Length: 382
Image (cartoon, rainbow, N blue to C red):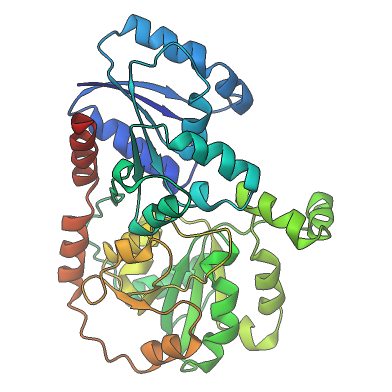
């Protein structure tokens, strides 16, 4: 089989969609003949889209064996439906979550009117599939294929070594503390400020929270002007541009005395350091909350924590339940239910299997190799 992959989300850009695109394309090269059209580093995004039709036609002419073209998100797939010259190809697309529920009427009409014409739409989770169905894509045109997760080498770091790392590198004293870790960009659906305000004060005083992820600077003039926009005008841009919608609430909370010595931010860390910290943490938390017009398409960060051996507590929100099987590789809790989170952390009564079993379950269910083979099977059936 000969497949053309088209993506404007690809490394060196960073993100879950970029990583999924990279793993799918490179994994598929082992199973089929693969061609790619990818937005390169420094390439103009508008120019990429404007030249796409011509470049696809050229590739198809030079490689007449191509039978399937796969677009790695809803936007690039919908743009392609205005193209000409390759109607003989089967057209497929992955949809991730926000590219389905983005709260703009023109976007929805433009994107989803087009997606109905694809031969196959591949949501990354059941929640994303349900959102597609609500917006009119026939269930027969949908096939859920979960993302994979990177393999991790066994960790040999001790908690004492992790404490020294945090003290020496960040000046954070974690000795004798119960370490919670959360990870990701400070966007509202991640629930970071909600957790700090509503859950953390009610936890055992020994608990502290380590936030791993980018720390944006919103104090430039553009940020100040943007914050003055009314919510209805600000929200679509926050979602489209992945702006840090939870950053200001976080800063306001962390300026208050009760939180200064219980919440610490590290900024971005290397994968090795993240894996080491996750392996010794008392728990990894993903306290997502429901946000209109946004969703967690798939709980990839939960899998990254689980495969490092962390005890995962996550909200049953969006696509997270596709990643976390309650009682197998983590615990699912009601989103926005502070009492449930407080009980689960203060008085853990769960019977989660040990770290080795959780790692094995995650590795077995969510390998990139498994995901790639499922894509190939899907392409072969259309």
